[in-house]
Length: 258
Image (cartoon, rainbow, N blue to C red):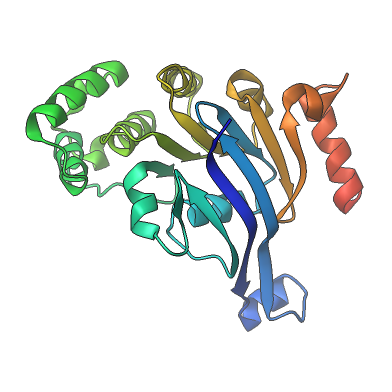
């Protein structure tokens, strides 16, 4: 099948300050966050990037969302290059990350309208989609409440609704269930499966094994900024659990995890 997302040889480094070099006990002046990363996500599937904190997952997704440029390599989303056509990429995707906070002085209703306008959504279509998404996530009663006054779970639900306000065909989620209570996490998980049922292509990052097992068709394991395994869950695990398979990969890559 034709890939909706194709990453080829992505590399990203960051400069290290003197304080950071001291903390990390290194003389290196740059840290490599992502190194020669290549993978594909076919249309209509959920693909997970699984790895520990600091593995390079968020950096990878930020490059794919055309928020930061790779040092080398490129990626194409629905044919648009993150290097040469970043605006084309941003038009076709929905992107949600815990690092991007909603402005707390605004209401859910205002923010949904604001982001819809950025994507030139007609008012009638915007209002119909807002009604549907707000009902789906139970936001109606809080639509006029400032984000600052919402619970953590409700903030995540508003973020989800806003991120797909323009009905994107490709959706990129960075740690979509991280820090959520079990009820809100289930709401998010169910929504991911609903989006897949609508034919959407979803790329998510996580360090939670159960999320990958519940929703992902395929996954890639990232350790130290490199892809160390890639395939269906059966291909990744064999006769082991995903957790056991992951720690075997970890030990082979960086040594004993203990």
